[in-house]
Image (cartoon, rainbow over all chains, first blue to last red; front, side, top):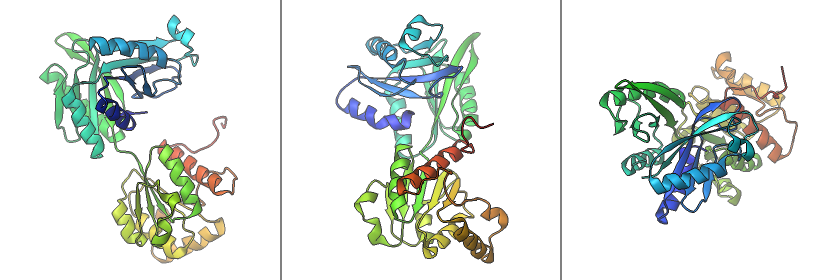
Length: 105
Length: 250
C-alpha cells in the first residue's frame, strides 16, 4: 500500500486525536515481498494499516513506531536474514529491507 | 513529517496531482522532507538550499515513470541519503456497457486500486444497485461520455456492451486516444467483423493492433466472474508491462 491508499485511514485516526507513525520501505535487497515505497501507518495504540512486508516484520516495526511516536525522532531500521530478530519473526523470503519510521507532524 | 508537508501532500493526493516526496533517511537532517511538483515547484527543506535544488532535479527525473529511489548526496563533506517516492493519482478504468461482466470487473478494479467509470447510454441500466460501486456513472452516448470520462495515458478501457451501436462509437473514440489499454469483449469471429468495419471507417492496421480482443487472459472460464477476472488479470499484466504468461514459462 502506498501513501495514497493510506490517506483515508490516517485522516480518520488523526481526526480522533490519535498520534500516527508512518513506516516506509526505502531499500530492498534480494527477494523482498513488498516494493520500494510500500507503507504502513501505525496508530499510537498499535493499530496498523497497510504493510511493509508479507506480514513478517510488521510487529517489530510497530514496536519501533511506538518509540518514534514517543521521542519524535525518525529512525531507519534494517530487517533481514542477518538479523536474529528478523529471522525469528520469519522474514524467510531471504531478502533484507530497510524501513524508515517517522512521526506524522 | 511536518504538518505543512503532510497538508500539502494530502491536498495533492485529493486533487489527483502528481508530486514527489523526498525524505532524508540517513545522515545529517534525518526526517527532513521536501515536496517536488512537476515543473520544479517545491515545499519543505532538506537542510540546505543546494541539497534542495539537487534533490528537486533528481525528483523531476523520477516523476514521469512514477518511480521510487534512494540516492546519496554530499552535504558539506557529509553524505546524506535521500529517499524519493512519487505519489501519483490512481489509474482509471473506463467500462463501456452496464452488463453483467461489468459489475464483477468493477469489484476487481476497485480492489486493485483503479478509479472506475461506467459508461452506457441506456441510463436506466446504469442505475442498478450492482453498479453502485463505480466512482462515476455516465449515461450518454460513448463519444460524449468518453470525453467526459477523460482518457489519458494511464486510462484502461474495457468495451463490454456487445452491442455494435455502443461498442463501435466507443472504439472510434478511444482508438486515437492515448489510452494505456483497450480491450473488447466478443468472439474472434465477431471481432473480425468489427475490424473490417473499423477499417472501412479509416482506421489503420497499426491503430487496430492496439486492441486486446477477445479481451482478457486465456483463463478458460465462461462465467461473468471468471471473464471479469481474466480482464482484470490482463490489466495488471499490461500495467506492469508483462505478457501474463505463467511464472514457470521459459
